[in-house]
Amino acid sequence: MNSPMKDKNFLGKKAVIIGLDGVPHSLLVHYMEQGIMPHLREMTSQGLLLPMDSTLPEVSSVAWSSFMTGKNPAEHGIFGFMELDKKTYEFIFPNFLSIKAPTFWEELGVPAVACNIPQTYPARPMNGVLISGFVALDMVKAVYPKRVYDILHGMGYQLDVKSQLAAKDPEEFFQNLFAVFHKRMEAITYLYDHEDWQIFIGTITETDRLHHFFFDSARGGQYHHIFTKFYRELDEFLWKMFNRAQKDQALFLTCSDHGFAPIVSEVYINRYLQDCGHLNLAGGGSFKDITAQTQAFVLDPARVYIHLKNKYQRGAVETAEYDALREKLKSLFNSLNYNGKRVVKQVFFKEEIFSGPYIEDAPDLYILGEPGFDLKATLNKESVFGASHFHGAHTHGDAHLFISDRDRMNPATKIDINRIPHLVLAYFSA
Image (cartoon, rainbow, N blue to C red; front, side, top):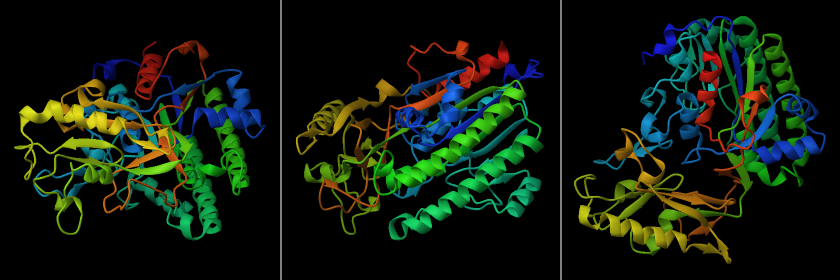
């Protein structure tokens, strides 16, 4: 993690980033037009609000890892929230210690505050303050240094929303959502005012929780008043942080890790592979029941792995069959349709989207769904299409980036989340 950047003098330079998990560019534009986010509209008169692409896969663990490192998954080593042990077929859960590339604040060597960024658990020592985000299990292990834990504990800070409430008691869920959101904003504001930093990152993840369960109300519907209330409060918070940054002559950014769309249907890719004869399970039907007759399986969200001989304990696909099997599966996935609608936007071979020393750990194919189709690796489904308590699904496109200094971006340039660290590094180096 040593970097020549650490030898440079960045005295006086500051950057502030407010992460807004899962907040689409199109939704922010809509809320500005509706008068729900007047402060953001004022901010855009000085800076730029741009659409941005996520990573592939378009999930928080991967996208925020790329946000922190400026690297693609084959360089930082995170391809999803879970992996499969090649011998036992049991789940492995990568965490912050699994990321194999330095964060951009480590590269700069400046004091930093990083609050609630997903994929940062457990907290590891750093030059500054780290408060882990999703998936954080134990608050003691989620905070560095310990003195900050004592402050947060006294504040009543909570690591995450009680998402299980959404399906059984929406009103209680909304109460909890706002309670956690208010404590999150309080903690971010406190850390901004009381800690020493040159890089400040505070991430709001309550947006993602609201969207997953109720995104069908984002522009109207039963719970639209909740969205209106939430985004008005978020607008006030962004305005407050923007003005603090302006006062401190800091570069100010907001960004999301992916977009969101209302769900048309959930799509269970492993069921599809079973129906087509490419996935075979014995007994209980878990990943530990994958048999030697299996040619391919999927891990969330739509990572397809060829069951290769000499790679997996029960793998039987020969290397000579690999290319032909990938082509066959690509055609199979491209043929998926739902009530006449195309389900799959594009199927990628791993070498088309990943590059780096950890490409061998990458999925052999990745399926990007059309917006509204929530591709899942769930087993034990009786049909390929279905529905659940989720009403919003991630999208690769329609993430957003706001930057206070419009001269630092060409608005015509297509950007993705990997670009953000490089913008900050260029700002500090200028």
